[in-house]
Amino acid sequence: MSIHCEDRERIFLDGTPEEWLELELHAASCEACAKELRAWQELSVAATELRNHQEDPALWTRIAVSLAEQTAQNAARENRWAFLRFGWRLPLVWQTALAAAVVLVFTLSGAYLYVQHQRTGNAGNTAKNPFLNDRTLAEVERTENAYMQAIDKLAGEAKPQLDAAAGSPLMDSYREKLLVLDSAIDELRSQEGQNPSNAHLRYQLLAMYREKQGTLQEILETKQ
Amino acid sequence: MGAVGLTLAAGHRISPLQRVGESRVQPSETGSFSSAGAARPEDLALAAACQRGELQAYEQLYRLQGARMKNLARNLLGTQSDAEDAVQETFLKVQRSIASFRGQSSFVTWTFRILVNTCHDMRRRRVRRKENATEETSADAMPVEVRAAGAHPALRLALERAIATLTRHQRDVFLLYEVEGFRHAEIAGMLEITETASKNTLFNAKKNLRQLLAPPRGSQLGGAE
Picture 1: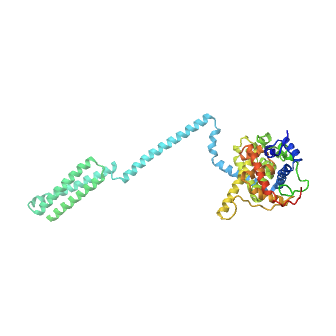
Picture 2: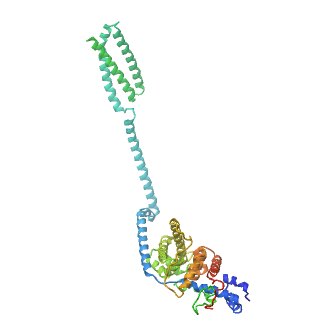
Picture 3: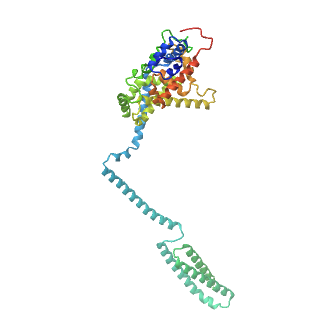
């Protein structure tokens, strides 16, 4: 095999040892190739000037410290989640049982929380909305009945006065007012029968009774 | 004067055959195991010890490759302190990601790949800092630190400046091949390129360096020749 000048760069790029040897032989008789070959090789020699493979024990000490620190940090991080890996070391049967127990606990907890929520929710609603619960309603009804009986008694006392003063414009006016009030009271009582928990109806009914009470007292005072 | 414009001491010239093919100085000659593409048993044993978290294994890796790692980092970053930071960061990254090492490449090759990437990250960060500080410096320029005088301080300085003007890949391949003595197969593994690309890049790097270091026309006053 004979090497020519035009083969030089190809050998520089990817020549075999045999080709390099032949190029060297060729360069002995070719000044241009000798110059290029020398320059090429001198770059490699010059590169060794950048080589300084001195030991540096101090750097290792620094690296060892940082490696130990990183190991400690990793260990601390892993410990935080170590409990999650506990299950993987158990046999499959125990893993299944553990999973079932976890599901059961979650289900029971969920059910308990749901029931509690329903209870507290009802209590909260009762406190907030205008509807009354059964016990309060019974108490209110009792008090209301007593109050109504008292008003009826008062009406009974005022009736002779109203009858005696028939034809008096004032008494006619009181009578008419009492009729309106009784009509309104009857209306409210019928609505209350359909919706006994509605506190608003009860407030209105109470207001009517108060008004009736006030009117009856005025009639009785007129008598005096 | 040398043909590349650098004066070499008499007798410093090397034989062409010393630098070609299999006859070039191999990394395996400087360490107890090779860093060739395929992992060797010693290499795998060291990697396995590192995976077990043995600090002695890291110490062995440092003892075998630390000096070369630091030298490469210094040539890539330009300063001793940056080089030390890069080597330290590389060891931390190796420890963090050793679990992902599957032995498909040499452990040393893998480590040097991390080192090269770390050096590039540090260079990028440095450039960004400089840009933030609005300093008028070349983005790719690297500081050249005065080092202990070698046999040819002027030669080394000229070469460092010339290398700084190469492209990133050319600089990496030249330093890994010519300075650190890795083979193209190993460099290909480190830089994630083909072996042919490594050879082409080295060829172009040397051509560029030859032009950069060539003496000005008419100034050849003779020397080593």
